[in-house]
Image 1 (cartoon, rainbow, N blue to C red):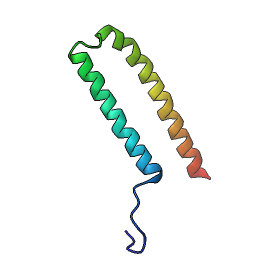
Image 2 (cartoon, rainbow, N blue to C red):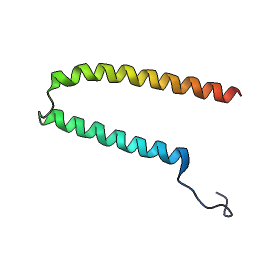
Image 3 (cartoon, one colour):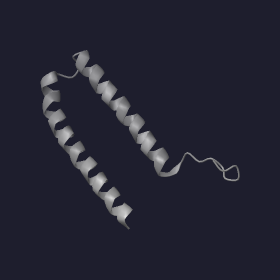
Length: 72
């Protein structure tokens, strides 16, 4: 920590942290909806497979981009 530079929580790390917080809240709300039978379990099963595959694609793309950025 450099005392001459003001501490910043903005930029990309701040945005990623905000997205992470929102994602956790959404997952918690969906879980509560399933437990309270607001969302039928059958409707959620099809979506979970699609969301899992989409998440796998996004993580793979992020890893590939990180490796490409590191080599430059």
